[in-house]
Amino acid sequence: MRWRYADTALTLCTLAFFATMVARLAISPVVPLITADFGVTNGTVGLALSGMWAAYALAQFPSGVLGDRLGERTVILIAVGATAVASVLLAASPSVVAFFAFAVVLGGGAGLHYSVATTFLARQFDDIGRAIGFHVAGGPLAGLIAPPVAALIGARYGWRVALLSGAVVAVPVFLLFAWRIRPTPAARPDQPVRERFAIDPLVELLSRPAIAYTTALATMGAFSWQATASFLYTFLLVAGELDPGTAGLLFSLYFVVHGLTQPLMGTLSDRLDRDSAAMVTMSAGVVGYGGLVLATTVGASTLALAGATTLVGLAMSWGAPVQSRFMDNLGAAERGAGFGLVRTVYMVMGATGSVVVGALSDAAGWGVAFGLLAGVMALGLTVLAANRLLGADL
Image 1 (cartoon, rainbow, N blue to C red):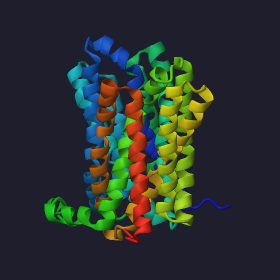
Image 2: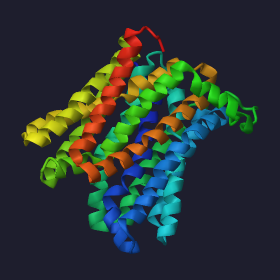
Image 3: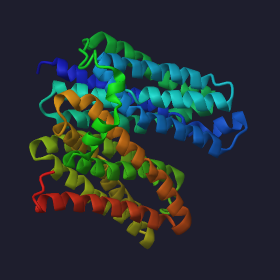
């Protein structure tokens, strides 16, 4: 079969997402080495990581505005280039203050990629769900590869060399993207940027029933994703009473399933409809998170935990149908900034998942904390079912 330009664009956008994720995910495995080197607490380095993820979320809307102003290709190249530069700066940080600043730069630079790339891909494909599904899969792939590789490099050569892995991946992706992707025209090259940040149009977009409904679904998904990425390994280790190796294998299983099912859910949303595919993911979440809690409560086998973890991986593939739903409800002229805006909103709200689930685990235990995630998935499923049964057509 002939390799189309659209397939090249999809492959390189996915690689770009992979590169920007590798740079961020390479940090966590070497946190103990960083704290020891700088003589600071985990909380201090954790604050830097929170700043990085906050900058990533807040960059989504400005990236869409820049994409309309400069063209998507330019912004994606800036994002991948900034990721490479920030990785080098992080590795060379002379102090923890500099480390914090460069972590924020990394988050903001990497955050310029996703919304713009999604808008770019939506113009290349009629089957948007499939394309978004493959693109999103770059994140779980990075989650599977980057942490163990960074840990191995850090143990042998130190944390500074481990963080250079972000640049090692980003530089060839930057060159490939610049070589193979054609220049893209700017959608609004002459419109003053300040007009794009006017409050009234932003409020109007977010208050549209279909957008508000989809943002609510995405927020529930992002809340669960953030909490799962932060605490699933610890849950399996502590509540599941697994040894570190087994817990690590199941955590890797989560990323494998998450990555493989994104394209499948995207394709399903193209062939059926967005809400049917989203209902599959939310249903898997109810059973998966509930299964994890039940398995740890009754002392079930590792196989039972693996089955529940597999369902959680499927559940976190909500992004393909839900993000495609945004594209369906945004006009072609507003997709760049519009998708960036809603992505900033639901990512910022969803980021509370780590804080809420972490605090709840301290106060009431891991069973209650992960039971909350089952409840969030049940709420999402209820919202989807109500929209269908009541014929609201949001």
